[in-house]
Amino acid sequence: MRTLLNKLKDIEQHVFGTAAPGDALVFDARIIIDQDLADDVALQKEAYAVIKRYGRQQLRAELETVHQQVFTQARHQSFKQKITALFK
Amino acid sequence: MAAHTLSAYQRQQVFTDLYLSAFPSVARYVSRRGGSFDEAKDVFQDAMLVWYEKAVAGQIPQNDKAYLMGIAKHLWVKRYEVNKRYIPLDDAGNSADIFDLTEKHPVTNRIMHYLQSTGQKCMDLLKSFYYDKLPMKDIAENFGFSGERSATVQKFKCLEKVREAVKCKGLIYEDFVE
Image (cartoon, rainbow over all chains, first blue to last red; front, top):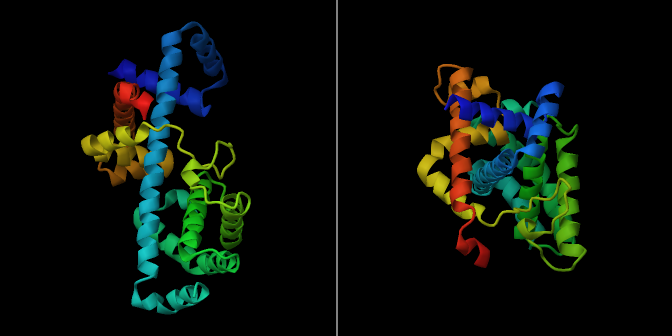
């Protein structure tokens, strides 16, 4: 497990460009000669894309909640009226 | 404002403030161009999403209201005026600018559904780190870990779960015929 986590960490530093310059150089060279590692990097990029999409999905849900609140709560009544008047 | 340190509750407060201060201008702009309330809501919420991602990346706009208005105008023109037809943001081309919220992986819906049903806590932890960009110290506290080190180990274990899901569910026959 430790080895696996270290591999994920190395790939992460490569993807986000946070590795030390010397390490980054070695890693770049390894990708060229090791197709499995190159595939691993591609897989991890896909995983980050899934997480980003999940983040956006959750953020949209939070924004929808705020939208419902500002258009239904009594204390935001004047705000609601101001907006509604624009679309009459 | 340091958006990268916001909890979910604080985020809601910030979003509410932005809604109350910036939405009226966006709504007025859209209504004057013949748009509907729902269209104004859509461009505004997408503008908020762009604003949030910029803010957590440490590039907080000097004037939030003006920034949101600028993004909303750009989105409006891009979607409703240039082509005279509505293109939902998620399908709106492949340009690489910051307004591109295109999802390039059609299979991720199923992968996300699978991950949410099997490991909501993992997905929330990963989101906190990679999307909300919260410091590991805060994540350790929020998720009840003894320290940053154990939270980091857990983060990588969760990342491996997502990798496995992508690997197993990413390339099956149905994906090619969707």
